[in-house]
Length: 118
Image (cartoon, rainbow, N blue to C red; front, side, top):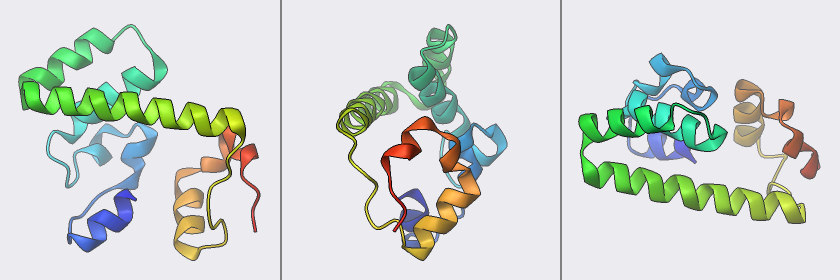
């Protein structure tokens, strides 16, 4: 979705930000580094969460922090529900989807087993 949104808005992005690349996160996304570090901390529940939350607050302000926290929480909820019931990713044969999955190495994650390639 990020790639398609960026293409529609003529915004350059680096998808490697999704894999934790701080330099990639800074490409085309305001506060990208701080957002990526915050999201990574939320997802991994690491001890640096307070530090990354504070860095995002200082860089972007309280409104962005609240939005980022809400999106992260909602994403965690949706992914856990989908993984727990085994909902597959839609349209696995789509060329763009295959390209993005290959570029990001998505198949390395255990939950990839819930999706059957068409």
